[in-house]
Length: 301
Ligand code: 13P
Ligand code: SF4
Image (cartoon, rainbow, N blue to C red; front, side):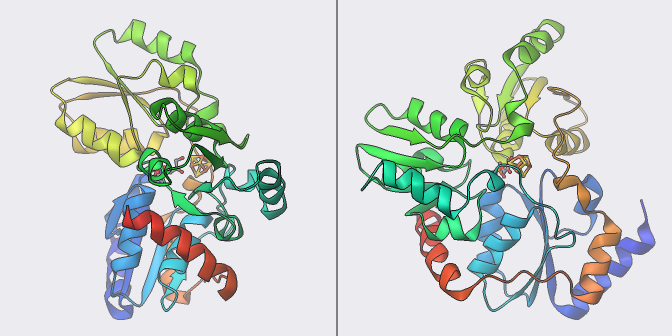
């Protein structure tokens, strides 16, 4: 690892009163300079709480945008602005309006993996860590859930008195994982616990011993007495588990469980972002105001 570069980034961070937030799907080298590493919910909380002047977001676009909405007075930088989220791109404002018009009067829960415009048009946001609690909090018989059909379907399966109507979006990285992949790994590692991210399909979730967000999966591995785990989410989680718990065995469900957008950022990009203060995220103030209401409602839960 480039120790010289790490030193330079840490120095710049101090000089500029900046913090670096990193999602746990990022290239593992980013942890060397990150102040906080975690799932979407944890990182949004950190973005809302920090006193720093600059937030460098090592993640994808919607995460940096959410940080900007939560901390509008701060400069939020995304080192590689083309890092989008394939699921967030599956619904735009017009598609959401059409979905709502087919189900008039039904409240909308919006997964945080979405654009600011879509959040602004929704009643409340959720992340993979709190989707069930958020749906429950609405206290209604029907709920619309966008854009992730799998996460919405998972909340539906856990709440017998709520009907969750889902939009047909999904994350290709998680959607491509099939029940046969788990069965195959289980044959190889019969004593392993199967830990699944709720962006996976219901047939995959059925085979899980535990379902949780990326941070939820990491905590479960720390607490469990089990020695072997099949990790059914993106590779970054497995890289961190192997680094932090070398005494246990972690098996990545399949080699191509990799989010290319999450992997765009390298230490060089972080340094350039801090030095040149690029690429700054901006959100239209009217949209930001409405989206903030939906995000804050979630954070309170
Ligand atoms: P987490 O909510 O676990 O951070 O997941 C975010 C994400 O993009 C998963 O694909
Ligand atoms: Fe989006 Fe999927 Fe990548 Fe998460 S893993 S950022 S949902 S494309």
